[in-house]
Image (cartoon, rainbow, N blue to C red; front, side, top):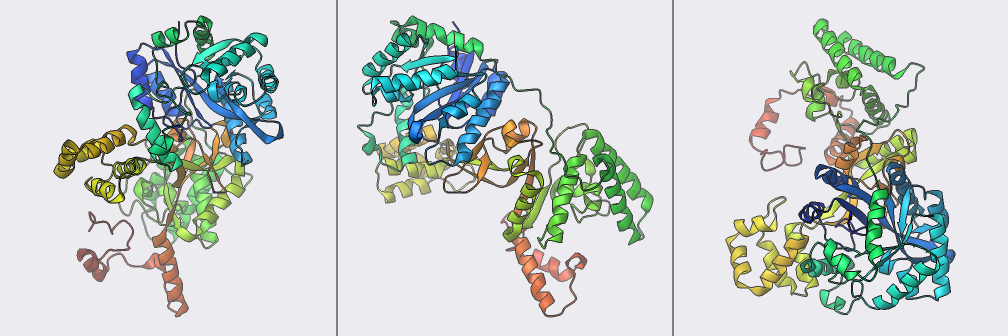
Length: 600
């Protein structure tokens, strides 16, 4: 037997589910399970992290997703679980998910046509209690349910399974009986699942707390709920075999499904977008000419030693060309030049990118690296292959203009902003748990404020750092209840948002590499993978930062110009004694990167 749970939600199912990927891997190793599936609801946020952790642990990863089905009259008729058989199935799952989210329908789900278009290399399970069989057998006439199952099973010929679970939820006996009846009548194979939401049965209450936080309700309001059961934990093979002893084929068929799922990510390579070249030269020649002409223009205005600059430029161009990153520099150069031409203030450059002479002569930065003895190797080094990464600052008020220009240049389908996950941090999770447990605001606020104000601090660290919090925890049962539950869901994703700076530009449609996701109440799509996962599959992230400081500087320069002063920001002297006096006096509030307490 190659047993695993084919229907499993991790903590990336935002509405419910508390399973951390690391805990899942450790549980599988402990139980000698050789394959794992991840089937979060309407997303594959954690797919790359899950895949990499599984491969590292020598466990077979099965990527899948639970997806609502939209039937006739735009009606939701329960969920199905789609599992990728291979990389082509993964690409088709991307298209299905992206199509669902780009539709912006009030009822998110896949209709029959969408499933038919992208059914290839996908296995379909009927979804268990909340699936097309369970949901409909409890709410519709048998003939209607049979029609739905028949239509979908005919899309996935020899790859469709009637999935049923046994978790002691309301009306489960009735649904199981009907599920087996449909399987027999339509000659469809059956497969057992446990609709897994947490690792251990002791995590049930933590899952309920997460659900209550997500739904903005109190835990007491959920006492009579029938959505979830304490039995939805990661049961062992022996427990599942015992539970389904009357239907042994439902356990045996798990092995058959696992055998058919052989998803493997392609070997890593960079997927650089194609530069929108305005000339008839090839990119390599165009890049070389831009660099040489830029340096010649700079040297013609000064009496600098030309040989040093020419040798440095030649070396940098050689490294950039050999690493295949010329198009990256050209793309960045183009949208920075567009910003400058369209009255969008741009920062002078910072970070390791300021060590590049190529960046300077292309106008990406305003800093001569030779003058300030800056090293190119800190930015790009052939001995440590990694993508170049410019942090590019734009005026906060006009940043979106640059993004809109990039979208119009490369295409809406090839450009996307990047997802971020808000997490349940120590103070926040204590407040949330206290609220859903219906403790008074004053009491919960008092406990939360005992957590030291330190970025990224964990509850366990807070208990060590704060004697008062530790004392309250040891002596008061209510505090212990809040803290213990908070620890179980601390750090889990709570919601999604947009990365403050990052955008991705893809060489073809974004959905060829990953699905997109729609944010509630916002007219924008974002990637389903975060910045780290985007880079790990070889796509290129560009940081388009919005900086209030640049907005203030821009407005100040314009005010000065109104009074007919001949003022050029680029010619401000860098050795003004009065300025250094202000720095020495720590008078740097409002000055970018100099205003923090540490810098002062």
